[in-house]
Image (tube, rainbow, N blue to C red; front, side, top):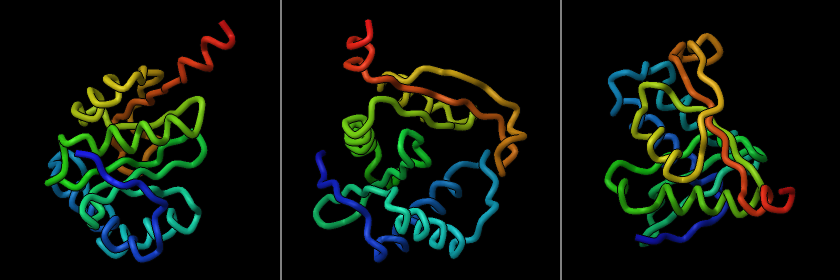
Length: 153
């Protein structure tokens, strides 16, 4: 399934905050450290910074990516839209805008690890979780554009 990508608008913050909250609730290993209202406010802040792009299918927002330059802050797809290429579309769009990307994912999130590895990301670092607010062991992944590597090779 292919969607329409666009910059997020302030009016999207409620939908995106809910998507974030639902993703936390769907994973028993992930502690719920923010309220729904805090998730909405957080998404509003990221939108205000210009970091968020959303994917719409039939006029409904089904996924988003938040990125500050090369750092992917978050990538979420609504549960009922997962497995349909939305995450891939958002990630490929980000890859077209920069020559490298990096992100963190939790070690417990094996699905995310497989997704990023399928899309050319390599593991760069593992931590015990003392550096994130959830306190969960995590992994930093990096991706470099093959075009950029070939230009220097």
